[in-house]
Image (cartoon, rainbow, N blue to C red; front, top):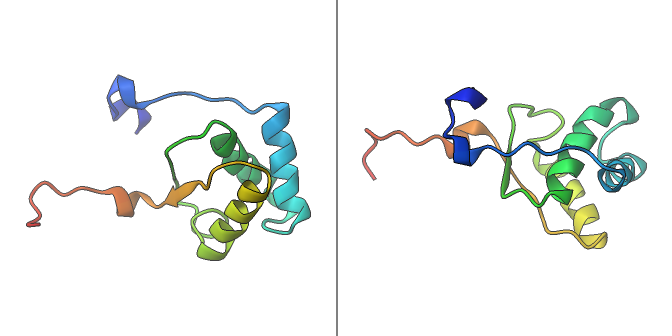
Amino acid sequence: MVEALPRGCVEFISQSAESEALAQEYITEAVVARRMLVDALHIAVATVARVDVLVSWNFRHIVNLDRIRGFNAINLRAGYAQLEIRSPLELWKDDDQDL
């Protein structure tokens, strides 16, 4: 799917010590369980990189209102901006749809 996106719309980012520490904070504050470290890192890397929107199909651990609120509470407390987390369906644009 990434290959279908226009080149200018994709940026690859990596985890850092800063994002690892933020992910650990999500776990410490029980936003996600320790076994969900990969999901916590996903959110933390996006937060530290200040992405515009994180899009995910993971409704259990990421696109979940209680978790989104938890991630963002920690983000704000740590001095980061809130992270927009959406499902692909929220961003889907149907060109044939009447507005």
